[in-house]
Length: 128
Image: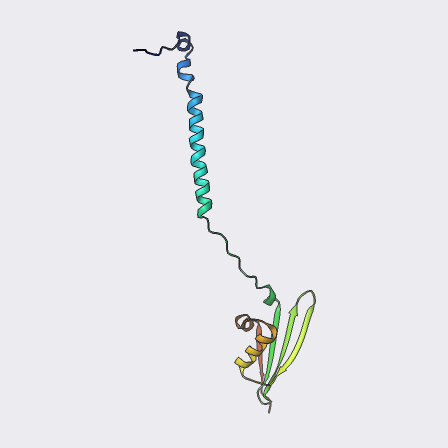
């Protein structure tokens, strides 16, 4: 059989050990590159996409004050909205029932009831 013989000068210089090292380094570099790319793409696929939350900005700077006159059977509503300037509005409702007052104000201002309840201040006045 034919046996491959390295030249003597490679053995003399110690090249029979050093010659395959660049090839081994290249193989190692390629293998670690493949593993790194796999890990990065796997973690990018499994990441949860952030959900957008609706800002509460339209109702953030609003103040509602309700004065209920039980004896007279009506209430006065004062609304302050802070935009670039402070807007004030006022209206009267012909009822003293809290749920009716809340529903009417919610419809007029286009605010959900949950937001409305956080922004309202009730003042009861007993008039004869």
